[in-house]
Amino acid sequence: MMSHWAGDRTLTSAAPAGLAHRTPRWGTMLALWSAVFLLVWTAVRPAGQTPLYNPSAQPRPVTPRGDLAPEEQATINIFREASPSVVFITNIDYRRSLFNLNIFKIPKGAGSGFVYDSSGYVVTNFHVIAGASELEVTLADQSVWQGRVVGAEMDKDLAVLKIDAPRERLKALPLGTSHDLQVGQKVFAIGNPFGLDQTLTTGVVSAVGREIESVTGRKIRDVIQTDAAINPGNSGGPLLDSQGRLIGVNTQIASPSGASAGIGFAVPVDTVNDIVPDLIRFGHWIRPGLGITAIQDHVARRAGIRGVIIDTVSENSGAAAAGLRGTVADNRGYVQQLGDIIIKIDEQEVANLNQLKDALDLHKAGDEVEVTYVREEQVRTAKVTLQRLP
Image (cartoon, rainbow, N blue to C red):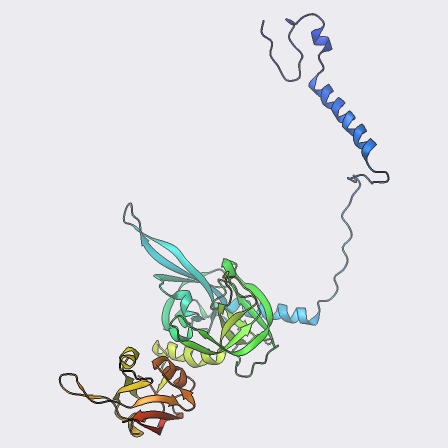
């Protein structure tokens, strides 16, 4: 008869007489090997070594912490006051299914922003909302609202959204200034890096007066450099001073890996204060200008001209009052008179349209600038009063 195992029982009675009595049980074998191991381990254990486990171990008593340091308490208060103003922005794209042609939504990207005022205006970076089919704004209380684009200024990487949340849920950040920042000042960045909401990092102003490129390739001037950790998802969030005032909008990091490497940049609040009101009023920034239109750079380069060629001069503009002259062409498009070629605004060289815009962006409507230009191979200057461009 075939034999079989049943738990730790011995062989069946079909085995030869006395075999069952001589076959050890599994439990007996395990106990035997454990005893052997214990004896061997005890024999080879170095003299004086304590046992590995202590059956009487208990939780240790807690040492009272005492009062927080004043600096710690100040940081806690800044976060407590400012975090309700910080929002999480989700950029959503519409896609069509390949199988049933239904439209579905997918997250395209995410970033941060902050409540600008209790009317529901939210400020963020332009690159956070770029290309969105739909935008969701999540407040600090985790309520989600549809964001509508009010306006954007791509050259400065700024945008304004509008949400229809109740006023009691909207807490605006107090605004500071950036022109008087000093290297070494304490700063605080709040945002949603990697989708982790309401994250605080601290650091100092590492440098001021930096220049970075916007998504359009134009320069953003007077940028704040900080070592407060700024990671993907922090874009559009606020940079605060030690009084909890907004001093910048976190926008870029300098890192080959795409993660914080101790060098982050923020658009200065003075620029925000100049541009955002226009975005809310008109949907775009009304920049100061001379009152001219210019011939495109590639045409000037093809003609071997370095500078900005004036195409037309608007009536009643500062340029017209200063006597600047545009290009004149006949009915067939042949140039009869080349317009004035602008080569300098005040002391800043102008070689192309971007440099002209950069020079004018340093001023406000009503300012007077000195324009250096070339007419009929002669270098001339004129005083021009800047105006708000339509």
